[in-house]
Image (cartoon, rainbow, N blue to C red; front, side, top):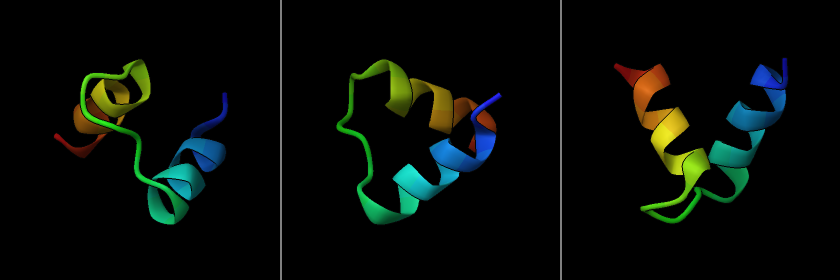
Length: 30
């Protein structure tokens, strides 16, 4: 759920370090 939204958000406006969104993206990149 929301994978496309997360990727779009990452490209247009990367989440700040320390936020749940940032942690989630880092896990997805691994």
